[in-house]
Structure formats: structure tokens, C-alpha cells
Picture 1 (cartoon, rainbow, N blue to C red):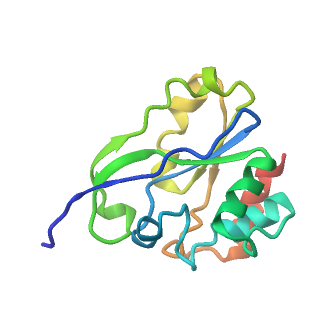
Picture 2 (tube, rainbow, N blue to C red):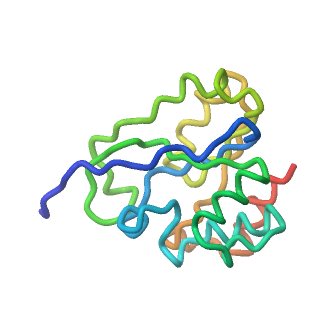
Length: 162
């Protein structure tokens, strides 16, 4: 087995106008390498959010993407803060340390909905629902989840517009 080292995720992208937070599991290898949420070019996240926001986020640089995402009331974060993993697959995550979500409701009063990008993050939906957030389970934007086409995923992701 390859050597595993503790990997750290990214801070949340959120502000006081954020009404919907999209939670992934943990950044993949390419995202960690370039220090960008959904940095792997084949991940469909930015295409999906372009359709949700009605703005071509894919055409923007990373800072522009984040800025425009926030302008539309959307934030980003992951459920896992740190873990051991070789490669990019969620199934290879070990020793996961979960982010502390305890102050979200208090610090971001406009936040009312959490969208869960994929099955790993969706495991946390009950804890968010229990404290009053609306939750939406979304098919993973990862290219590893190829059972559904982009168009099929988009049908579910467009519910973020509601």
C-alpha cells in the first residue's frame, strides 16, 4: 500500500447572503493540487452550477467563479475537514475528521438550505435537517459517478433554484 498522509480540505466559501450551501465530501487529488473546489476539469460541478445560476461560471477564472457563486447566494464547503487518502475516490477516505457545523445557523442567518453533492456528504443530511435546514440530496458531480448523464444529474441540481 502507498504511503498515506493527512490531507486537509478547504475553508468554507460563504457569506452573510448565502442562502444555500453545497456540501461535497472532500476535494479530489487535482483540486487539492491546485487548491480549488472542483478543480478537476471533468468534474461537472461548475457546469451544473452554471445552469442553476443562469451564468456561465465555467468561463470565469476561479476567483470569479467563487465571487459569482456567492453573488447568487450559494456557498461551498465539504463535510470532511481532513482525512487520509491515496488518489481521489471517496471510497478510499480513511480517518476522516468532520468539519464543525455547529455555528452555521447562528453565524449565517440567511442560510436555509443545504445541498449534498453525492452519497458521502448526503450521510450528514439528517443532522442538518434536525436543526431546521432544508436538505436536498444531489447526484454526485464527480466523473466517477457515471451511472447518470449530465442531463440526468441536471434535473436534480436545478432544484437548487427553488
